[in-house]
Amino acid sequence: MATTQKSLVIPAAKAPLELRDMPIPTPGAGQVLLKVMAVGLNPMDPARQKQDMMIPSYPVVLGSDIAGVVEAVGEGVVDFKKGDEVFAQAAMGGGYQQYVALSTKILIRKPKNVSFDDVATFPITFSTACVALCAPAPIGIGLNPTLSSDKPHVGKSAVVLGAGTSCGQFAVQLLRFNGFSTIIAYASAKHTEYLTSLGATLVIDRNDSPLADLPAHPALKDAPVDVVYDTVLGIISSAGGSGDATGTQAVTPVDIGYDLVKPHGLLVTVNPRISLSSTRTGKEGVVLTKSMGFYVGPDVIPSPMSKVEHTHFGRYIIERLPVLLEEGAIVGNRVEVLPGGLEGVKAGFERWYQPGAGGVSAVKLVAHPQETV
Image 1 (cartoon, one colour):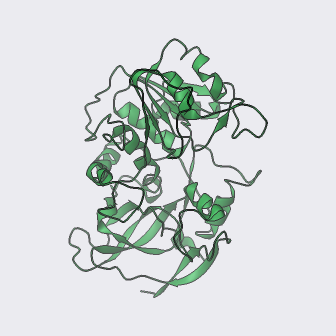
Image 2: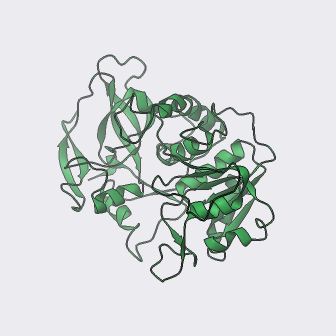
Image 3: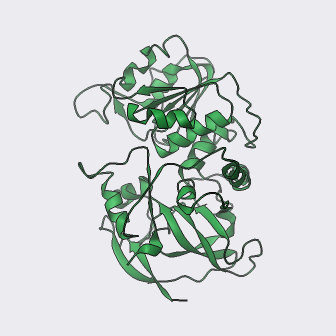
């Protein structure tokens, strides 16, 4: 086996991505060496690069949605062996290279009936949606704390704001899995057929219905819902665009979610920095849950953002997700494979920022590190 590998590195704060030859790590005690077959791109990665955010030191290799084959095992590892196919959430990164050493405590077994590309869409955004919707308080709203298949919420209704995002697509599926009878997806109309196939019963076009006007939509104005999940990171103006640079009054997705949910309903967001405005008060029993999508906590992997409750619930993700994938109860995002291996990640990063670069909409960008020249 070779001793060096291709790695996509950020060499210094806000520096461009750089392809380098780096040593292949040796797995430590309780770790495996994973040959990375597919890595999913997450919009947090280019944000971390451009804003020097959540990066403790440089040089650094990002990439948190990892799927691959166990190449070697470290001391004390008995549950995994060379050749096992797995996927994992490496919250701080390591996936934008050809090999990575990972703790066995974060590995999820890949069923044979799904591809590496499929499972590379799951680790960050599926966990984000699953913790938010299914995990008990304080980390989620507790719809299904054991991920049982008994559809405990038949007859209930929900709205997913940002349903076209990777997280939103998984949220729609999880609501269907949990038995919700009405699942309203707020997204671009061009994704209607796709979101309906995942379980949405109605798609409201975000281009025709600005967020601020959503409570007046005919499907919602007289029918408050049981659950609202905000998957939108940021503020959407009352005109429907991002931010408020045009001078329009800005509204937040969670404020609109508060307007949509019924008394004693459940309101949850992916945004840890957002809060309800002072004008959203008085609706009995409605509080905002801010949820982060980890499936292990600081008792397993040191992290300032996760909680031990993530580990408690995460065991159900680790155990149940392979079963749900094998049964077809949950499916991966639509995938676009970037050409050129790790070189393709560079172009993928720019698509979140550069006008005319293609954009990213209702698809997960995936790279194959082993194809890097």
